Image (cartoon, rainbow, N blue to C red; front, side, top):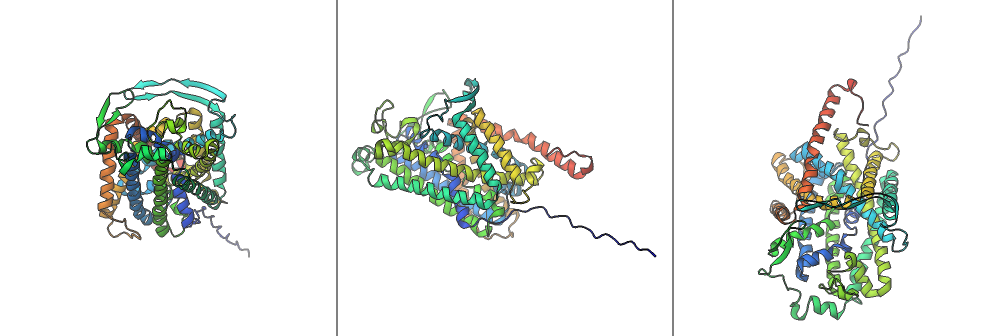
Amino acid sequence: MSTTASQPEVPKPEAPQLVQSLGLFSSTAIVAGSMIGSGIFLVDADIARVANSPALLLGAWVVTGLLTMIGALSYGELAAMMPKAGGQYVYLRESLGPLWGFLYGWTLFLVIQTGTIAAVCVAFGKFLGVFFPSISTTHWLWHIAHVPGIPVGPMVLGNMEIGVNTANLTGIIIVFLLAFVNVFGLKLGALIQNVFTSAKALSLAALVLLAFTVGRNATAWNANFGDHLSQFWNNANWSSLHPVQVGVGGPTVFVNLLVILAVVQVGSLFSADAWNNITFTAGEVKNPKRNIPLSLILGTGFVLSIYFLATLAYLLVLPMHGDPNGTTVLARGLQYASEDRVGTAALEQIFHSGGAYLMAAAILVSTFGCANGMSLAGARVYYAMSRDGLFFKSVGKLNPRYKTPAAGLFVQACWTALLCVSGSYSQLLDYIIFAVLVFYILTIVGLFVLRFKQPNAPRPYKALGYPVLPAFYIAMATWICIVLLRYKPQYTWPGLVIVLLGIPVYLFWSRRSASQTQHPENQPDLND
């Protein structure tokens, strides 16, 4: 007799899963570290020129602070309700539908995340040039072409230098270095984020402390505050009118206080953006239902407070109004700080020649930490999109050893490097600020939708002040969008075009995904 033994089935190995390894401190560091880049050291010069009032300069940051804090409080409910990788992409998908989630992810990949990483990494290269002069945007290794500016309605398209110089090459090296480092597990990326966020927080705190003590001077105080704060409130009353140029090369019109505060949000909101990045990594946060809402509140609260104090510090060290042809830091003032580097100007006024080196070192730390946080977080959105069949299939796979979205990190790095070489990231970021605000509005609208559609869904944390504060956010942000559409079309219509280009891409991805699901045996794996 002979018997045939049946072969035992070999179980298929489980696909690697994201590992929950981020604690509250690391989560808060991602919020704060992603927010603090180079903007706070630069944008106050432009805000000061447009607002033309110390009170309105600080008022711009108050508006930004209110919007961002209400946004963070509202996102806390969504994050606790849906603690999944992808964050805002998931919230839009679940509340308004997959198209809106995709359009956000598409815009994030095309411009928002990658463009910001490119900008801060090239800024790293520029400020490294303070210590190594051979690193410069004018030191070309391979100059491909110059694209002249072409007026298109209220915009100027082009005016870019395409190629590789020592500054953007440094930026590209940082881009791929951070992608490579973040492949080796979230703990390593989080450690880097914790160290650099702590360092940049201490740098900003030191700047504020110095300005409030040894840096404060009588010239700046008299110019910006005067007796009984008479200078402080100058041009900040309801009857004051402020000149604003419509578009690029358009007519100059005069607007009131509410309009001018909305116009200047382009700079302050951009500097305070990326606070939502922690939601992208929700699948890797310990006790996410508690730690994500708490990290949003702590991180945004700290950064917005330090931004307001930093701007006040500038006013204590530098007169707001100045002469663009002035030969000293005080003569140029805050409005006309050299190349808008108000942080550098403030430290030069305090320490004279050594100030530029101190600020360059602070910005190097700040930009490196910002780029690391955004690189780490962004890849998680593309991972979530891929899992839904709306992005390259390989991006939806995790590194089996380190449980990280390695493919997503390097796809993101490659596109970011291309933006660095093309020189287009700065214009793209200008174009997309409006679209970013629109997506924030839509996400908070989604909070109301989910309260209606899923009233009994578990909500470990509920948005503080609901429905009043979220509705106030929608009203304020909508007002800013209307003002920007009217007075700054160069920042609005191009962003909308970039978003709308995602619609045919969504239809392509979704149809191919549906086709592969129905007939997988007949479909080549083109997504890879």
